[in-house]
Image (cartoon, rainbow, N blue to C red; front, side, top):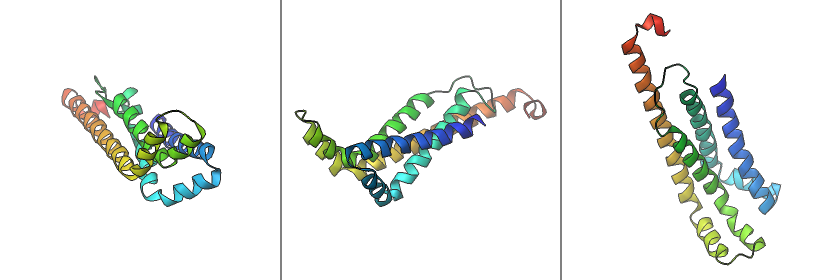
Length: 155
């Protein structure tokens, strides 16, 4: 059950961060409209991060296989989540710049808003690479475990 809870929690957490930031910067209605407009990429980002969290939990807690080394799973999960969140929020960054009169923030926010879709694809790509690497680690360790012990002992 741990992987299921971690996956659902990760997906809901990412969605909550997105809706909270956009709602604070603009409004709840704007956040919902923006999410609906970008649902074709936002939903895969959110679901992909949930899958990544579930796989990370399996690796970290050594579920289903005695995993000696989880490799870069933690770093990949963090990078995927951070990139996905930044990409999903990039569209409204220019509104935050209007509120926060910090020198240079307006240019950066405009850059993020202009390349939002590209950042979303980078976030999705990072998430998919993270999933692939974690699955490879999991399958490698499972294969090692099956090679060491007879299958009847592992199951």
